[in-house]
Image (cartoon, helix red, strand yellow):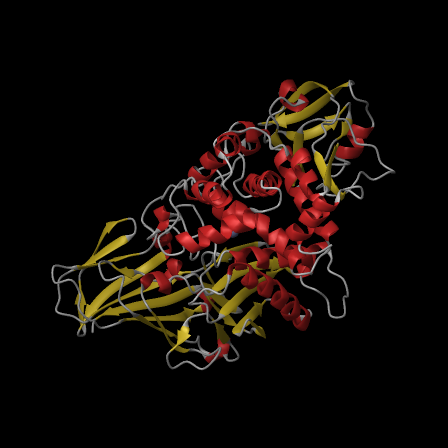
Length: 601
Ligand SMILES: [Zn+2]
C-alpha cells in the first residue's frame, strides 16, 4: 500500500485573494522530486499557464528548508531528501470564472487545476485534501460545496476529503461561502445545487425542473456505474454566463435575472437559458467526461492536445441540451424550435463557415475559438453552433434514409457503449454512425464535417414535419427564432457591428464582402456620423432606416484620431435570420418522427 499525498488548502488571506496550498509527499523521488501546475484546464482548450498565479513557493522536510528550483514555466524541482517532503505555495486567486480560482471576503472558488501542484511521477496515488476555513472574522458562516468524497468532513463542512488520484483531484471544483443549497434525487442518486451570490429566487422550482431534466438524460444513456452523486455549483452574478463540466459536478455561472422569481409560473427566455446551460453540462457527464477523445486519454495538461473531435463532444452536446429541454417536458416544441432556429441564425450570419470546417475548428480551438479577434466571424466557425447543426442534419439524414428505423440517438448510445472506457478514435463517430445504421454516410462527413458546404436543413427538416423559413434581421439585436415583427421593416444592410466602448461607439466586426468592408471601414474605427447625423451603437438601426437599399451615404469615423470619410453603398439585408414552424400538413410518418425526436406531440 503506497502512502497517499496530503494536500491542504485554505483561504489564508481573503482580502488579498490568497489561498495557501500545500502537498506532503511521503516518498519523494530520491534524485529530486518535481511538482507541476497544469498549463490548461480539462474542458477549456486554451493554454492558461496557471502556474503564473503562484506568488510564493517553498519546500521543507523534517523542519529543514529544501532547495526548490524552477525548471520550466510550470514545474519546480525539490532537492533530494529522505522525506516526507512538503511544498507550500501561495496562490493569487482573482479570476472570477468557472475555470480558475477566485477568493475575496465574500466567498472562495477554485478549480483544482488552478491551485493543486501535481507530484510528478506519482500522479496515480490517492490524495487526501484538507479544506480549511478562513479566519472567523471573514467566514464564520461559510459552508463548503464540492463533489469530493468526505473522509472526516461533515456534509457541506470544512474538513478532509479523499480522491483516487491527481486526475480526480482536479475534477472536483470547490465553492466556499454563504451558500444556498437545494437537494433532489434522480434515479436514486442524490443531486444538489449550491448557489452563491443570490438569495431571492425560487429554489424549489429549480430543484423540480433540474430533476426532470436529469431524469430524462439518465433514461437516455443510462446511469454511469460510478455516478453516485452529482452537484451543480452555481455562482450568480449581475451579468455572467458560463459552465465547465466535471465527472460528478459542474461549475456554472449565470446572471441574477436568469433565475426564476418565487411564484413565477412560466419559463421565460432567461430561465430557459439557465436550464439549457444545466442541460449542457449534465449531458457532458457522459459525453466528454466519461466518453472522451482517445487523444485525451489520459490528458496531457502541459501542452495543447489536438483533436478534430471537439464538435462531437461540444456540438452534439449543444444539440442535445436543447432537445432535452423538450424531451423532459420543461419547454414546448415551439420553444425548442426557437432555440434551434437561433443556432441556425448564428451560423448563417458567420461567413467564416466557408473558410473553416468543423474538424479544423475543433483542431484549432486553442488558437482560434478560444482566442477570438475582430476577424473571427470571417475566418472561423464555432464547433459548438455548426457542430450542433451537423448533429441535427445527421439525425435527420439517418431518420430519413432509414425510414425512421434509426436516429442519432442510436449512434450516440452505441458510441457510449463502445468508447466510454478507451476513448473515441478520431473517426470513431463516423465508423459507428455507419455500422449502427447500415447507411453510406461517407459523403455526409466529407461535405459537412471535413467540408464547408451549407447543410441542406430545409429539406431534411421535412422528415420531422418542420418548415424552415429565412428572412432579414428586423434590427441589429434580432437573434432569430421568430417570424419578423409586422410593424417594422428591416433596415438596409451595412454588414458591420457597432459596440459601445466607454463614451464611444466602435465598429467591432466588419463582415467579408459587406458594404462596410467594401467602403473601407475597419474594426476599431470610432463611429462619428452618417450623412452628418451622429451615429452610435444605440441608433444604428434607426439611422440606417432613414435610407433605402441602394442609397450611397457618407459615413465618417475616427481612426487613430484621424477623421475619415467613407462612401458606403447600402445593400439589401440578407436572409440570414431563421425561424422554424410545425408543418400542420405533415404526413403521419413525419408526425411520428417528430414525436420520437422531441419526445412530445
Ligand atoms: Zn460544453
